[in-house]
Amino acid sequence: MVLFLSSPCHAYDIYMETIPEPGLKKLHAQEEKGWSLWDLLERSFKIETDKFNGKSSFGEILAREMSVNVGYTTAVTSIKQSNKDGNSPKEIVKQSFTQTVGFNGLSPYYGRLTFYQYADPNYQQGYEPDFSYSFGVANYAPDTLSIEYSNYGGNRLSPKSGEEFTDLNQGTITTTYRFEVPEKVVRILHPDDEARILGWASYNLTPEYQAGRWWKQWFGLGFSVPIWGNISAWAQGNLYPDSSQTTAGDPDFTYGFGYYDWSPGGFILAYSSYAPNGFPWGNSAKDGDIMDGSIFLGYNLDLQAIWEFLTGRDTGRKRDKPSKTRPPWGPNLMEW
Image 1 (spheres, rainbow, N blue to C red):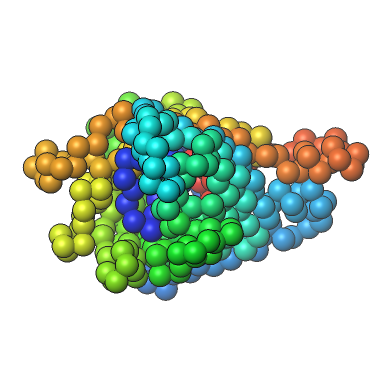
Image 2 (cartoon, rainbow, N blue to C red):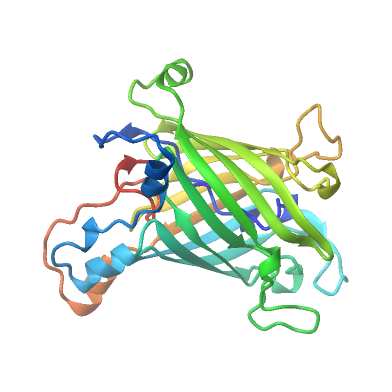
């Protein structure tokens, strides 16, 4: 599960992130890849059509084309914060509830929409959204490209004076290349002979990252490592080529670990930190630590089972459950 904000988070809005994908565990047999630019583009952007062959029930189609996740996120520690009017400061543990709907029918092309409710809505800050969204093409197999747009800005369902429904300029365009770490390196780092480690390199561009300030860009390099079963860990380092565009809230690196089961009926329990973590040789004001992270608990609805229960049309056929660890919009050639 990987990676894409409108701007890197401060310690107190870490829970707004999407948890990156777990690392590769096992490879299925697949065709020999070409190495031309055309082959790379074809692997990355070709629509999967095999799933449209044959007959499918409405429940099967629903589960195939959509994914729904409900979640709860809590910060690890409390912070002192004023309410939305700038008054009544108090110690508060930031908590939110989310509902995420994904549309995956033309995989690898997708759209995703998340709604947020805050445990104490009076302390919802201007940068904390009522909803966030992303769309693009994301093929999670190695040696592929992804191009995605995401917007986690202060989007409002009912904007008041000074607020906006959404501002497209505050979103981020992310281009990612995913690759498999060479096996010789994996053997040194991982005791499992079948383990595979996924890496990614990304370029991120935000048109308007602050009022009147334009074209913030940064690079990311990350890795996801399987630990045991559905348990994995990930980390990403960030590079900001223009130091004038960065603040003490922009992390030098982010990381997380947990149990990831993105299949229908599966759940996710994970820790992640998008706090202003700093390298020892970097900006001393970046003082994020492990207590600045957040914990996410999510459940993926089994839409096919729900539909069959409501309609009484359970065929009794044994369904092949998708991979327990890859996102439902990911490739069907990999185990994540």
